[in-house]
Amino acid sequence: MHDSLQHFAIVRHLGLQDYQTTLEQMQQFNARRKADTPDEIWLLQHPAVFTLGTNSKPEHLLNPEQIPVVQSDRGGQVTYHAPGQLIAYVLLDVKRKKMGVRKLVTALENAVIRLLARQGIEASADPTAPGVYVDGAKIAALGLRVKQGGCYHGLSLNVDIELQDFARINPCGYAGLQVTSLHQLGRTLGMQQVSWQLQKELCQQLNILHINEQRADS
Image (cartoon, rainbow, N blue to C red; front, side, top):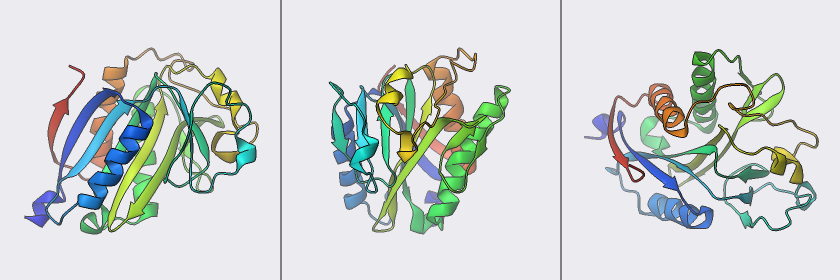
């Protein structure tokens, strides 16, 4: 049973979801996880929000103004979410999958790199600063939490998000870090198309062979 679960996941397409509510749902899912609980991947978007990771320093939050700020329990520094950015939360039994944090981060980065490569975009990871970059500009951010043998949180990929609000922070703790998106790079893919492509690449990188796909936005 457990061997088959290593290769199975429920993929949920959840549409636009409040960050704080989703955070609590992830925490509850991980706390209630049992040995035979299937892994899940949640694909969604958030309304505009700044989130602070466990290593966040207040000086990296420059000028939030009216945008809410939420303390998160993921790793990393401050980041920004808003509509037009695709979020992929990976709720995995990392003990069952025999994946350490470094291996998991690499898998998530590679999923984005492969997706971008299919669009003719050359991207790379930075071992000193998790995420995916195109010509030095960040297009995807990563942050994870591992607890009780399970992980949650995941990655955010800029599709057609308005980029100017990233100037209100030092993205991921780096002053002056440039941020880009698929739209800014001339790729006008719709969110559903990018969601499907990212789901495919994540499943390949995480060795998920079978899925139960559930859509709340159809």
